[in-house]
Amino acid sequence: MRKVLIVEDDKFLAAIFALFIKDMGFEVVGRCRSGVEAVELCNSLEPNVVLMDIHLEGEMDGIQAAEKIQRELEIPVIFISSDTSSSVVERAIISNSYGYLVKPVQRKELEISIELAYYKHKAVIDQKRKEEGFRKFISDAPVPIVIIQDGKILYLNNEALDFFHTHYIEDMMGLPFLDFVEPDHRDRFESFIAPDAQNGKLPGRCLVNMKGLHGGTIETDIKGSWICFNGKDALQLFLNDSFQPQAHE
Image 1 (cartoon, one colour):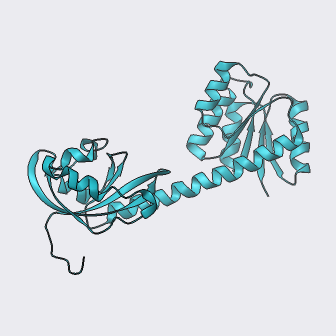
Image 2 (cartoon, one colour; image 1 turned 90 degrees about the horizontal axis):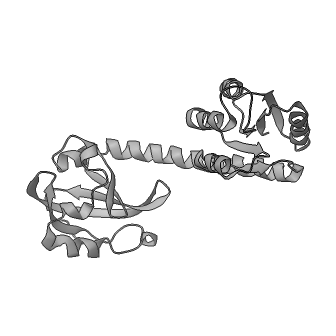
Image 3 (cartoon, rainbow, N blue to C red; image 1 turned 90 degrees about the vertical axis):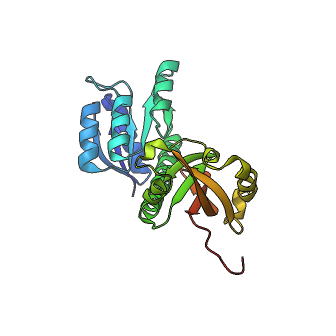
């Protein structure tokens, strides 16, 4: 059963929303009239979805409360407001809300919005947990691994930092990976990564000369595959700094 918190300073509207939600078969876990109280109730009641008015009592408005709830507690928020001014709508969009309903709200419209917010948030959290596990796997891996997205270094593990002769990941993040491939070997590397993401694992291996962050040639044996990282296609590359003979490749 979906658990819903209603944040609305109009008692009549709050009662109407509560009737709608109960009629849907969901549970109203609480009602409040201020942003501060909304944050407190989210901490204690752990609702699945929050219906949030924007103009509330007190110093914290609905958008500020929603940002805090989503940032600290990872609970999806749907805004319900009669305010359609561009400045308010823009703030709501930037806050990464899960919906914006304009009063007066119809029952079916509210039900669909709650269900969409619930399942969209569940998918976001599932993906986040998978990526957290994947990051841990990369960090603990005993070989240098680099993640590349749109040609730039998105992430690399500690072994890869050692490979490039640096201790700080900030030195490498966002830099074009090709900058670390010797110029006369770049065509070879680009041909190696040419297969698109649908092909998954890259065929064979690529033997190229690379260089560390501060220079010096590194003879490198590269293998790789296409993966999904942060919701986008990315290349996962495994680097070996010596050409080990491999049979039947």
